[in-house]
Length: 373
Image 1 (cartoon, rainbow, N blue to C red):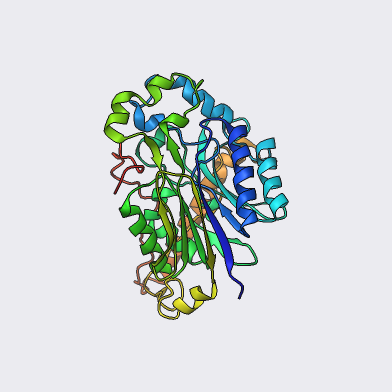
Image 2 (image 1 turned 90 degrees about the vertical axis):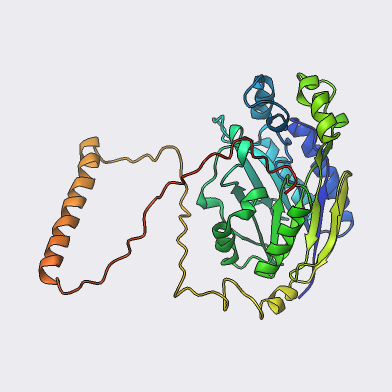
C-alpha cells in the first residue's frame, strides 16, 4: 500500500476577507503540491477567518460591524467561492480540506464547516460542527447528523471533527465505525493538553491524526479593519500576548508518536508520509469498532437525517395531515390493548431508554476552547 503524503497548513488568514484568504489557500496549496502532497489540510474556519472578537470583547457589545463582515464574507455552497476552492483542488490534483464560515444562500446563521474537495474538483464532503463551544455559540449555529461522514479518497478514508467536537466520544465512535484511517482535526485549541488529546485519539482508534491550527499576530489585522483598536485592545494584548492565534499544528502516528510539530507562533506547513498499512497492523491489537467492540452490550443510535428548518409536503390537506397522527396513535393503542389481552404472559420489558432527553447544564458561557487546557 502506497503512502499518503499529507500537508497540514498552519497559516494566517486575511481576517474577514474571503477572496483574499482564498488567494492564500491557492498559493499555499500550490506550495504543498510542489512538495508532493496528495492531501492538503487547512485550519478551522480559515476562510474568512476566526471571529476573534468573541474572545477579545464582551459578548454582543458593539460587534455589529464585525458580524456584518462575517456574514458578507461567509462561504455559500455553490457560490464562486466554493467554485474557486474546487478549482484549486483540481488544478493541483490534491484532496483539499478547508475550514470555512458557511451560511445558506438566503440565511444569516453562520456554521463552522469543513469542506472536502476531490482532485477532480468535486465537493466530496461537508461537515458542520455539531456544538460550538462557549462564546462560539454567539456566532455559529449547530450542525446535524447528516454531515457525520467519512470520505473515501481511494488512497485512504479521511474524516474527523472540529476543535472541541473531538471530545464527543459518541461522535468519534460513529466515525470510527466508518473505517476512518486519517483523522482530521481542524482547531483553534492551543497548548500541550491539546497535543495530548491528538495523541489519545490516535491511540484510541489506531489511526493517523492531523491537527491543524491557524496562526495570527495582532499586527496582521488589516489596517482598515473596522474598530481595529477595539478588536485587539492593549489590555488584552498585555495579558495574552500579541499572538491572537498562536498555532498548534501537529501530525500523530497510530501509536501516538508525534511525526511532525507541534509548531507555534509562525507559519509553517508540516508534511508527512502516512503508511496506511500501519493502521491495519495497529488494529490487530485494538480495533474499537471491530474486534474490540461489544455490540451485544453497547449500541449507538445515530440520526443522520438532515434537519432543515422547514419540511414541505404536498398533496395532503392540512386537515388530513393533522388527523393522520391521531389515526395512527389510535391504531397503535388498539393494537397494544389486543396484544396485552392475548399475550399477557409475555412480561419481558421492551426498550425503555428515554427518548430525546434534553441536556441539563448549558452554562458553558465564556468557556473558550481557544485557551490552553
